[in-house]
Amino acid sequence: MAALGTGMKRRELIRLLVGGTLGWPLAARAQPAGRLARIGFLGAASAAGYASRVEAFRSGLRELGYVEGANIMIEYRWAEENNQRLPELAAELVRSGVDVIVCHGTPGSLAAKHATATIPIVMANVGDPVGTGVVSSLARPGGNVTGLSFFAPELGGKRIALLKDLKPQISRVAYLVNPANPSVVGPTLELMETTAKALQIELQPFPVRAPGELATAFERMAQANVEAVAISDDAVFISNAPAVAALMTERRLLSIGSNEMARSGGLVGYGVDSLAMFRRAAGFVDRILKGIKVADIPVEQATKFELVLNLKTAKALGLNVPPTLLALADEVIE
Image (cartoon, rainbow, N blue to C red):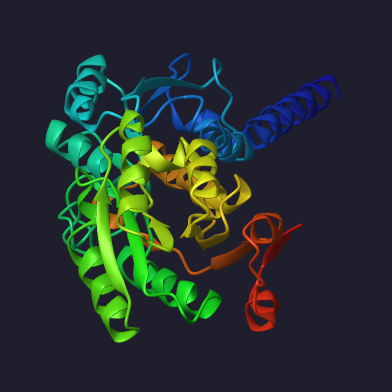
């Protein structure tokens, strides 16, 4: 009986130990005991300007069982809206020996790719990764880069069409663009110009490389008598959305840009849910840390686009938003 009791105790102990192990977060078991996975975050903007996106990414990691300081640590490098600093910051992360690099935007993704051919890279959101040479294919990215993308050229063209729907008489539109970002020029600008021409709209690019150039750009828009402005999805404008929106209101310009731009005081926002994309990027990091090869993880494309209308801004501009657009809106700010 004593022997039988000892055997039962052993089996019970094994059951408890195995059960406890299975209860651990999968992420905790993906790394050797006592070792923290090191994630490098390469930001083209500032920590303050991208706080909501970073928190979405961290939230996604927590949902997958990662705890900062327990099984992961995140090292941040911020270019402060200066794309020329990105290669240097990417090289710093490589030298620090991080296990994976998370980046956003085309300039950051290209900087990370040029800095390393071995450390896995996850793009949180990139407009046109194939067209700009970040990856060779969406289905089979190859190399060490994967992540999430959206249809930047098609998105730009749709925004021009929405401005025409908003005010059919419109004829002159400015395009606020950072020429240092390959994703918002090239094919995107070409498709926007084609769409504008078809709608009898004159589209004029206004380059801005840093926040300090915004005021001058809007002064030039006033001199050119533009009626509206389309804002490209670049870190300079996203992280300074309230300032951009204030300049548009001051100049009484109709506007369209990212959803965040409309929520910051712009008129219309049309684009992807960026917070959802950054949260989703955590899943890519999770798979990589569990040993899945980057080359075997396809790039995902956004499938949901949202229309945000700011009626408060429309009222300030004396504009009546057509009922057809109101009916299509996913969010209306009053």
